[in-house]
Image (cartoon, rainbow, N blue to C red; front, side, top):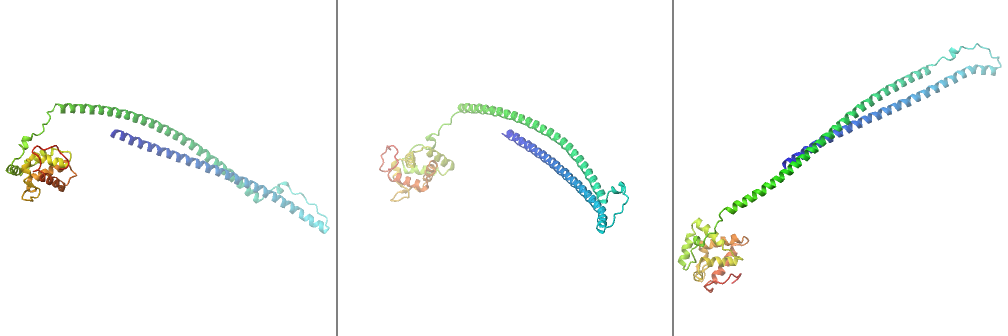
Length: 320
């Protein structure tokens, strides 16, 4: 799983890098297109300015010619109104009549500047187009390289996934073999034998002295733990049955009849014995939800009815 995670991280890193490169290429293309649009707009504006200047020059020339004609006709009108015969004047040469004015010269200068500006703009557009062509070719080459690298990466990831699947299959086979080996080893091992009753308790205590001697032996920690494990393995369908089974295993009904839980009515106090605490711990170990007061109540009931119980105890019941 670690190799697969590393492969996915590598693939994600390469994909992000390729995406950044594609975004950079898109930004470059967008900038070049914006530059081309700006150049087109500049060329159109220059053309509009050139056309407007040409129209203005034509209008200025027409107004100048009209002013010259008005100036020639004005003396003749005055002579006609005064009744004077117009004097014939020599015609001026065409060179003087055709001499351009200062406004016309300015118009021609502006036309030349506009034409030079148009030529410059065309050269700039040609340079921009060549640069864009070279940039687009470089972009296409870069995109082709990115696609090839992505294809190679996908092939490597497929190979890694196949190798991981093969490793998983081998691991499953090894786990099955190990389970079979462990089962075979466990089956060949000697099974632990349950502790015999004689090792912990030789039999029922038939006298109070025997019960007190047993209680004194429980002062040793090892003996106490051994007795708790032994009594806990006796079991029982419910807490009451477990308490009655333990008490029948420890002492006879005649001995238990001489005890009560708290020593009332001239009887001995069973709760003062270490055996009582061991019985409570064994019951609470088998029934974790039980409380100390519950176990004490079951022990008190069992001791109360012990004298009236037959020597051969019947089967366990949930209540007396």
